[in-house]
Amino acid sequence: MGKDAKKTAPADVVEFFSDVAQRSDDWFELRRGIPTASKFAIIMADGRDGNDSVTREKYMKLLAGEIVSGQVAETFKSEAMDRGTRMEPEARDWYARTKFVDLTPIGFVRRTVRVPLGEDFVIGCSPDSQVDKRKGLEIKTMAPHLLGEIKERGAAGFPLGHRAQLHGTMLCCDWDEMDLLLYYTGWPKPPVFSVTRDDHFIAQLKEQIEDFDYKLKRLVERWRR
Image 1 (cartoon, rainbow, N blue to C red):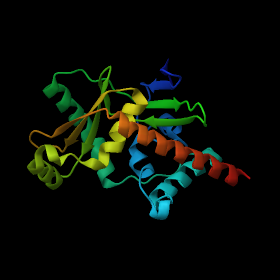
Image 2 (image 1 turned 60 degrees about the horizontal axis):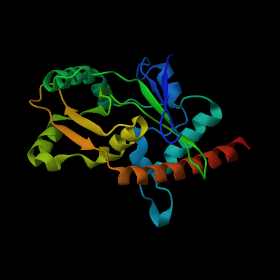
Image 3 (image 1 turned 135 degrees about the vertical axis):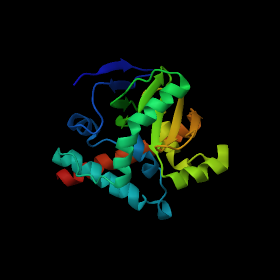
């Protein structure tokens, strides 16, 4: 398992694992016990009376279990996830042909975030491809009836539920832009939404992840005792 490591200002460390296949054993091991961009929306979810939301607490316990046991948590693979695995290669090919670009597959990206007055924390992401040095691609397969609704809304149809993941990926990778491709086999002109980096939102995201990580570490300490 190879990696290309680079240091970014001021002291964060970013590691690109380009030769690790997504959903392989090595990929699951890289993700074990660390928050990843696909779950950042959960981390940012508000709970009642200032407490953690139920989904955030559940995700925290899942990661704590992975850390304490040293084992990857058992996962459920839905029909929609199977659909995504089947359609992702043709979606990537469609994007490359229509945008006239050469895509670079990336298995996993891990970032160690340095916190001068606190505890460093580690995050990760699995972008579907890198478009260029400062841009990535995220692919989501979507049922045709939902694609139809988005098409009717035009630019206003951007699915806000993916905002945290896209910005989390930009945070992990030091990218300035992400394209979100919504795809289903046979659908004409799949919508592509371009999202530029919002540093204010990323600052909020980092703050929430740092709080989540602090509580995760304390939970692990209690469970190990």
